[in-house]
Amino acid sequence: MAARRAGFGRRCAGSLVPADTVHPSAGATLTPVTSSPLMLVTNSNYLLVFVYASDDVLASPRDMEERSMQVVEAGSVTRLWRNDIGAPDPLRDIVRFALEKNIAELDANGFTVVSPERVASPDFIAELKAAMLRVAEARSGVKPDTESGASHRNLPNPAGQHLYSLLEEGEIFERAMVNEIVLALMDYLLGVNCLISSMTGMLKGPGNVQLDLHADAAPMPPPLPAYAVGANATFAITEYSRENGSVCFWPGSHKFCRQPMREERENTAQLVPIEAPAGSLIVWHGNTWHGAFARSAPGLRMNLIMFFCRPFMQRQEMYCDRLSAGVLRRNGPRFSRLVGMDQVFPMGREGPNRENFARLNAGAATQWG
Image (cartoon, rainbow, N blue to C red):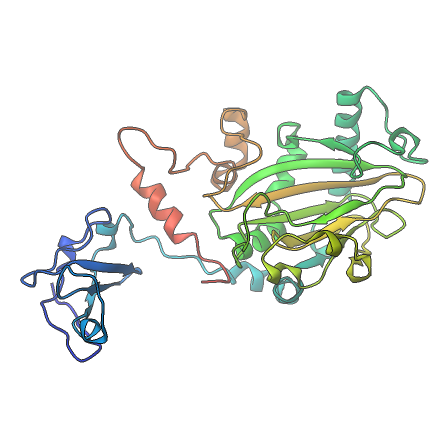
């Protein structure tokens, strides 16, 4: 196999690395030079191999001169536990659905709002609202009062009544998860291998307590990764305004890569409340600081929160063993991947599924590369 080599520095000794000798667990065999691999960086076509001239620890600039670097054409990438699955373009659906302004807002501010007419029909939102009210009453035994909000006034939780695991409550919630606009923005932030972590409905009535400022990336120690490991896509089922107890954001806070400190949580002057009609989609980066104002107006604030994550993150709700075969059949392969049906890990004695592993690697591409 023909290979290409590029040397850097004052010395570049040794021969090329045959692609057949490279294995992800064994490193690289470099012959005839007897050297130790320092680093192996790969992409779909080339191997970038750094080696020492000896096994000794580098201690001086002269030792650094003995380092070699070789760029080797990898050939068939299946030898790297990958195959010919190409990395999808994270901007493809952004352009297709004209979401360029929204991703600019995500990158600059950490959040964006997509207007209702671009997301879903009024009938879809009405069906979603009816289904949430049905589940809320069935689980609590209390019929929600949508006019006055008295049924949910001053609940102990400032976010109101929580309806967890809604993906199991009917087809309308399944359709919400695979909404094209939702997935285009989640793919942009998290890659096409992203998973649904949780689907939660909230019904909030009038009250006096606001939801404290926080980032959804918890619990992780600082600094948080600059790229999103989780992201939120929320359907506003009812109109959002400050009086209605809307979510609020600290613009640009996703770049801080940490949770807010106490004095920052108390600084409400920095917060921007979301003003949006019913049916809007609110999306934010998992690092973005956000909270929610108390509702002062009568009635209920209702939303459907879908939290997505990268495949290496622990999910909040596990659906693999809780969804029927019929649910999976009627929704297609992307739905199955979103609920984790083709996850590589944890694996058994036979090791990982190579096709799924290849898809996992190829689908990690986002706006961060």
